[in-house]
Length: 308
Image (cartoon, rainbow, N blue to C red; front, side, top):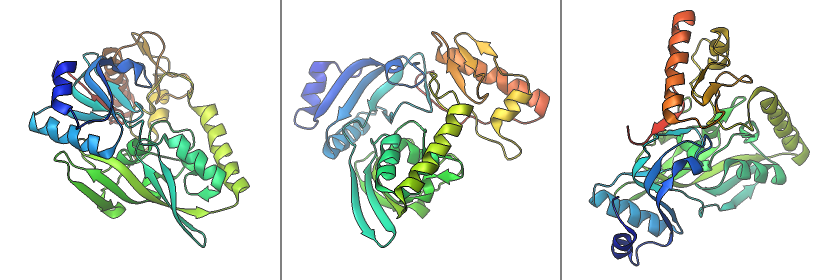
């Protein structure tokens, strides 16, 4: 342990407001229900508390990780060293301006992505429809450039406020964020606090109709209700990863409590008491089979974190 409660309170007295949990089991905070204990997990109540956590941890050489919604992440069975930050207290959505058909929103990093999607549906704001059904937080969606059905988060982002490990704040324009396919130039140690996004006004029924269409398609083709972390591998240029995995005969393949989904082969589901070791083992087996049968090396999309 880096701190016991007494040492924590002595170090952060007057510097931190929010909740603190020591030895938090990450399997209780991830969509896969996998992961060992984090040394410390914090839920800051305000940006100054985030800054103080970042600066003190940096000065003490303590690693800091932002969890987001716990989706698209595989946490080691041995847990996470250092401090894990979640942003459950950062859930503000605010309309900054409406001019003609243009809309600009201020959105905090801890807003669940589907809360933002539903906000847009209720207001008749277009630009987020294809992100319907994608789990996780808005901040995580920015870092991984979440997308689906031709929509990507980068297409609506105007600017992002980032806190660096030394506590400095920087507002970076979208063009400077290095967005790519399911990636961005935001470093793992950088903390996304909020962003401004640009949308278009549209007919509410039209926006809702597109969202219902995409969600219905997702429900037919993806194991939305299963314990998964979303897509395991990035889609190569030649063909979708799910199709390559299925054509290689890997559907139903299993290691321990983790198996390739029978609904969508690029989703691995925790069917029992699966572990991170099981998950990584299945990734290796599937990759080998696809490389052997299809001649393509799959690249992980899921983020793997924690102690080795």
